[in-house]
Length: 113
Image (cartoon, rainbow, N blue to C red):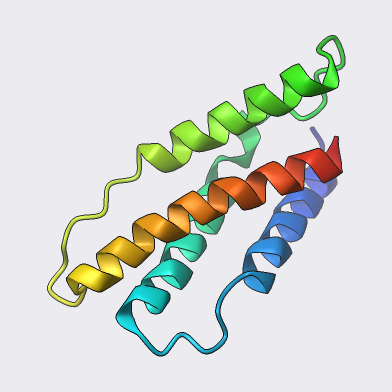
């Protein structure tokens, strides 16, 4: 996959994530959701090379499922430890943000493929 295509994919997914952040996150939980989305976005950007979006020998549904499974694995293996500056609500929000990022990724690949 060419660098331009990778950059376009990252830009499109980043835009979708940013669009779904809560601009008025006035609670620890909502701030955590935004943080979880940001972590997911960064992880996708760092690992986009692992995703094969162009596998043409698969049917559309199988390709979507394969890419979704890879993204889910990437997100599920992120470990967030309770840092002194994270409250319990923030940690719960981060994990909620991870779950939201999985749904957004599904929207992203369905539109893409």
